[in-house]
Image (tube, rainbow, N blue to C red; front, side):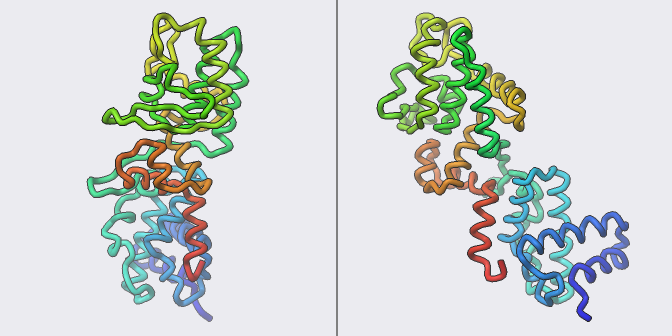
Length: 314
């Protein structure tokens, strides 16, 4: 009777490493989940070969997307690292995927936590909301918007515009009334390095902006052409927008995100919808495509689909 790779590794952990029963259960459960994700039978003599850098990244991204805690993902990485080294020593895998990756994944558990490696080190990606949460957040803002409360209408318009366009909070706060072209459904944005770009938006954002500019803004704005103004009538401060988004997330009952998280969510959802990476680069105002590519690391669903279509054992 063939002993599965799970049983073999579990025995190694117990007898050679002296691991506790809890650790053995947790690590073998992690490996079982990884193998199931890749569609690999643990009893297959070649099961250990399923552990590749690409497969590991896909599984970790999927874990993050499903809401796994940081400690859980860190344990996933530790389990895969340990298994990789053991399988190579035992001749069950042609290479030690952890060592071969030069720690691009296995030595940096943060990769599975939304932190992507780069030539200059690692960079944390902001927390995002999924499409259902984004819809709930925007609906919460829309339902609270009242003609008797111009600030509530402004908040709705800001949320709709940032999510629709993926613009930075600083860019949103620097817009003027002439930046918006409601007929063309576009906004002219002055980004980093004083580079101007034109970004499209949709009908929901147009409707919110119309309510704000026509009905609510005139009662607040004082001597400024700033599109979004504060309670005292001057250009709105980015800190006010940040605080508002945190409050709205709490009211909507979705995970807490910052304005950049809303921008990041917009980019992620564009990519999930099939948008071209270079088009997203233009929309976001990135000078380098490599910066935009960071956003693909959290698109776990798309990554999993690509893996299952491309991998011979998927």
